[in-house]
Length: 234
Image (tube, rainbow, N blue to C red):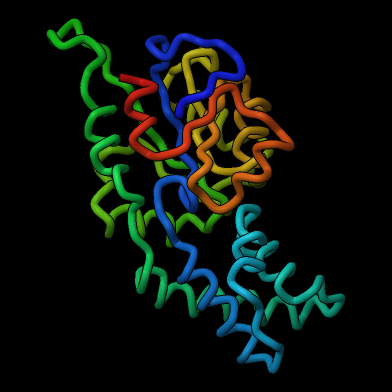
């Protein structure tokens, strides 16, 4: 079910910026396995999957720091982060899949808004993740979505991460689209805050990793399944 919490005109949207984990892809198992591999390597007890999933969203350094209980030894933390990133680099596609319905939604959204080109207006789409940029790009390409996005940026693409608006503002500048013609789509309050901070409209998806955080920071519209993104912007 699509729920509008603040009214806007979907037909006016010319740019869609998607979060990656929990929005386009279900990467939960590979992240859980990679964190627990890191914990085992350093002699720490493994964590439950739900606990690790709740730590996802603020980037790899924060994920590792949370999993380790915020260690004070920065040298140890650096080694742990490097181990996690190396393990995840090798195992990032063991279980990760595109959410059911997302390929069809992307294909639909890539069509001109007007059915009679050259008058049709082409929506542009981009990915802005807090996951490091290289695995973000590799996953998007490997899962067959690369051709849909004009930009794929990660958590180390800029000096700051979401919810700082720098990444979103960069995409707006590079595509030449105004904030009020743009929609940030993600599964957590981090994505909603990013869109707000950039002056964009925001869409929260409840099928991802952190739907409970959407109650803390409400988006402009909420969708419960991937196919509703196509219905929203059809």
